[in-house]
Amino acid sequence: MKKSYEKNLRLQAARSKRSGYLHIPKTGGSGIGQFLNKLTQTIGAEKVPTKFNHPWTVEHILQQFPEISIHVVIRDPVERMVSGFLSRMRMGRPRRNHIWNTPEAISFSFFSEPQQLLRALVSDDERLKSAALFAYAGIRHLRWNYVYYFQSPDYVDRIEKNIGVVREIDDTDAFLGEICSVCNVEPAMADKLYSKVHVSKVSPRSITSVMDEDEIARVKAALEPEYAIYRQLQAIARRQSAA
Image 1: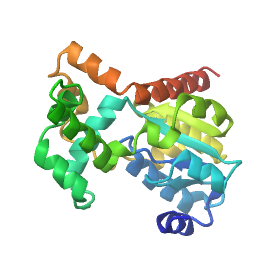
Image 2: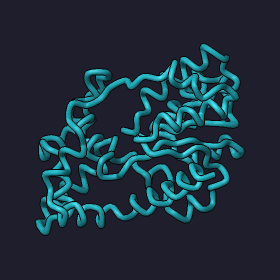
Image 3: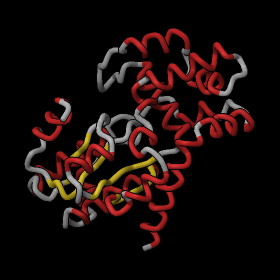
């Protein structure tokens, strides 16, 4: 097991291993993580889901805990990508201070705005497209994407029994209420313990709104492996909401 995984588990040794929260970047996970910490202080650790940090994949989690239910918050891939670009461009500040690694430094010397990267991904210019693909693989919040975590729609099908609560980022309040239910506490507890940690001054939707519909459609087509998994997770979320 990677040392980062061991440390992640060691810090949460008393938390439930029947239930886990996987923090996909730019889905509100910092606030959710703080909520889980407060919930632990309130009701004790044994009922509270273990929080799995960014580097974990679903496959790695299931290798360690085959019976676990994994809860996730999801977000549109393009919006998540824009938010991830902006977050890493500012090195996670003001809340974090994680300096760029070498691929990130190279990527941000080439692309200073997320829409530049999005357009380059579907460019006919081979130099631009190569730079965009390098950035997509090198900027950590972009590399940690749905394909990284869930591999493929077929894999999601195979492990669906291990998928717990799924909600869109806009439904975070409902997600937290469901997590409270998983922990056998009143959903109203979420209102008392949860607060957003950081809201960017720049909305991803404001970035994509300056691109025309054809550009966005081509970007989404280029990210189809991401969208295929996202749609499948959306379908799971809809079924859960309807139940």
